[in-house]
Every structure is written in structure tokens, then in C-alpha cells.
Amino acid sequence: MFAAYAAEIGLRQPLQGLRVGERPAPRARTGWSRVNVRAASLNHHDLWSLRGVGLSTERLPMILGTDAAGVDEDGNEVVLHPVVGLTGHGLAPGEPLSILTEKYQGTFAEQVLVPTANLVPKPPALSFAEAACLPTAWLTAYRMLFTKAAVRPGGSVLVQGAGGGVATAAIVLGTAAGLRVFATGRDERKRERAVRLGAVAALAPGERLPHRVDAVIETVGAATWSHSVQSLRRGGTLVISGATSGDRPTRAELTRIFYRELTIAGSTMATKEELTALLSFCVTTGVRPTIDGALPLDRAHEGFARMESGEHFGKIVFTL
Image 1 (tube, rainbow, N blue to C red):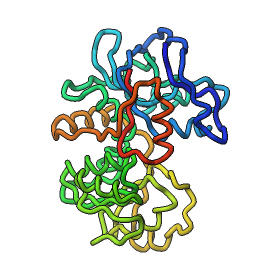
Image 2 (image 1 turned 180 degrees about the vertical axis):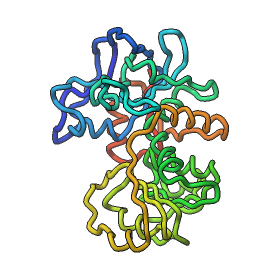
Image 3 (image 1 turned 120 degrees about the vertical axis):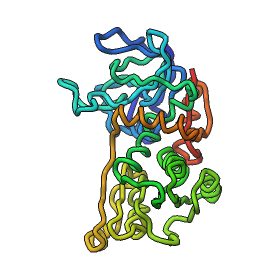
Image 4 (image 1 turned 135 degrees about the horizontal axis):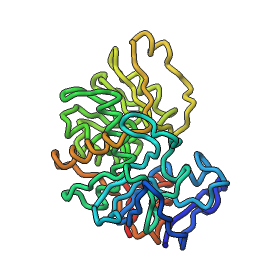
């Protein structure tokens, strides 16, 4: 079957380790289902995998991709929950917790094998491309906003780094939920698009907000950490799920954190139940993922290069 996969990792130019070509089709396994992939979306996790983060040489070659929507062996249209070993009640017995591409082959292929319990029905109202954008970036944003920060309609939130997949999702989801959303971004065009998506205002990095917010959605890391902490009201919550600019801020802001009684919450993986809730949210509110562009899988290098450049706004989708 045709696939896009990591053949080498940790190279000075990570994209040189990406290959497209034939790979063995997945073999049947009890309790698992084969899915014919119709669309899969790119995440920073895939780029980090090529850099050797979370993926070891012993597991190469590894088909990349954590997100997909397709058709299962019974003809059902489904969305994949990418976390293996996690159930609604905790860890699955005997199954180490991981996401696709860390231990198991990923979704950038004609077929992917996943635990049957990881399949969620795709709502007819969502296209395969739209549904494929949701399981990682949009699900992360959903969990950060509504589970970790627990913001409610009428609340206020700052989203750092407008343009990234999680940040874009947080702007759209927060606006649809009745939140007052502010965003930051280095690129003026991305700030303008953030406002068109519903942000009350989009500011340059470090620019002072009109007022302090209830929560901050942080994926940038070191470059925006101090600004994030300073932007919170007393008792507010900073939720962090990534650190694309590095994980060692020059100022930790510890005094401000304890004096203002702030909460710092990490967020990594979301549950299948949260994915089901997100799908329902999209159908009920009519919001849809922002898609930067769709490419056939044989042009995977172009998609990875665009993500690496930082020029994208929203999700990059591969179609089959």
C-alpha cells in the first residue's frame, strides 16, 4: 500500500528522512480494525517524530500520521481516536499508553490498523477532510478549554500563537461557546484571520490585553510564557500542551504565580468520549476546522515543508 513514512530520524534537515512509497498493508489482529483512509491531517507531532522526538530508530520505518477519517471493514464512516491504551475508565489492561506513530504505524497510508474501540462514527455533516482535522489539534484545544480550564460562556481566554492548529481550533471553539477570545500572533495576516474567525482582538506578541483573562491557551512555550502568566486574572488558569519555541523560559514568574494564586495545568491526551463530544459540538454549532490546504498523499513533502516554514494557518490535510 502507498504511505508516507519516516525512514530516518534526527537528521540535520529532518524532512530528508521522510519517504513516500510502498509499505506492507496491516495484518489482521483480534480486537483491532482495518480502516481505509480517506483523509489524514498533519500535526507538529509528525514533524517532531522526524526530528527523533518520541520515535526511536528501532521502530523505523514508521508510517507517520496520528489523525484520520475513513471507512472501516463493515463500510462504516469513522474517525480515529489516536490514543492507544486509554479507555473512558483509565488505562486498558495490558496495553501501554501511546499514540499512533510512537509504537504503532500511523495514518498517512491507504490503510491503518487501530483498536476497534478507537473508532468513533463520523457524523454525515462532516466531510472526511474536516473530520480528519479533529482528533489531535482540535481535540487538544477542546480539552484545554472545557476540561482543563473549565471556562464557561461569558468567560475570557487568551490564545497564544494564532495560526497553529491548536490555537486556531481554540479560537473557533471558544467563540462558538460564547467566550471572549483574544489571540496573539507574530504575523499580521494571521492576526487578521484570527479576528475573522471570531477573536475579539488579535495582538502582537507581548502586547498588553484590554483586561486580564480567565484562562490562557499556551502552545508556544518559552517565547510567550511570561506574557501568558501576566495576562491572567487572580485565580486564573494557564493550560499548556506544547512548547514550540522551547521549554525553558527566561522568567518563570514564580512569584506572580503564587501571589495571584494562578493554576498551571498541563494537557496532553484526550479521551474517546471527549472526541465524541467534540464531533457533536461541531455538528450542533456548525463550526468547522480551518483547513490551510489539502494535498494528495504523494505530495506529503510539500505539506511537511509548509508546516516547517510556519506559513500555514489551520490544518494541512492529505487525501487518498
